[in-house]
Image 1 (tube, helix red, strand yellow):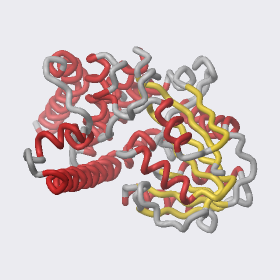
Image 2 (cartoon, rainbow, N blue to C red):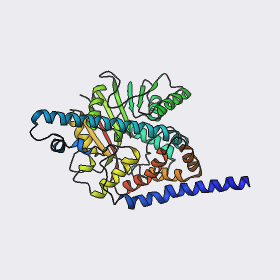
Image 3 (spheres, helix red, strand yellow):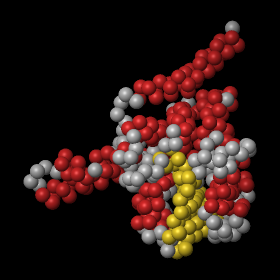
Length: 373
């Protein structure tokens, strides 16, 4: 009886998993579309619209003093929202990174499957190729001091340390679990002397001005709540002549450059809803376009600005992630993550939304590079 009871419990768990991963997401597409989407994971629409703040928070007749109070309240609200977002991001990666490492290894980003996305290769090789192709595209030659922003468990950091024999690579992440795993992996690889990792906020980097000659950001820019502050901070720590190189999730290019998908007049209501759903599961602030990044960098006076779209090249990646989630190994791994919380399960459900976004040519993989004058 005991073996039979154990088997029955396993099948019940499998049934629950199938319901959560297959039926719930499908129903969510229908149900959630009936409700207005929130602006982002931060939910701070009012913060971004000073005219509304003026009318709602500053009583009539209070003049400049009332305005000042209203703006201070808005700033304080924004800071709280940003901190909450960063805490959620750290918790998400603390919970989900161990399973990702078990399934995919040390690289926590998309793969490159050829310019048209049709080259036959393993998914892990595609991830390695993504790093090499991006370095080639950015015309990186022999960096000495490299900062890996949003380093994950250090896959890109170690790859660059091996590729460039004179490079010392520092990685920063919001996740203590990722930082510990990155450090352990570098020790195992014999790269502790040339790689180091720390928990740090990319919007307030703990480094002196003019420190690095290469800043690397592989799919981390989408998590930054204020892109203008982030790029200004990147400019600060770059040496003159140093290069910033990023690949990041963006929405499709639009004529409007507003750095906020909910108020972008060129996005449809359905597109805004889909982006907001993804933001909810992956703890993202407002989506921006590649053009938004280019404009922000230009406003900072950066030189040699270039951008590109590699969405076709990484096309097979998200379907591959979904297949691993449905595998027996993936199923068992997802069950184990329930001990620490639901973040990994939510992230698995969001894979379908990413597939949908890429298929609709709404979600893109944008590339941007520039040089500090």
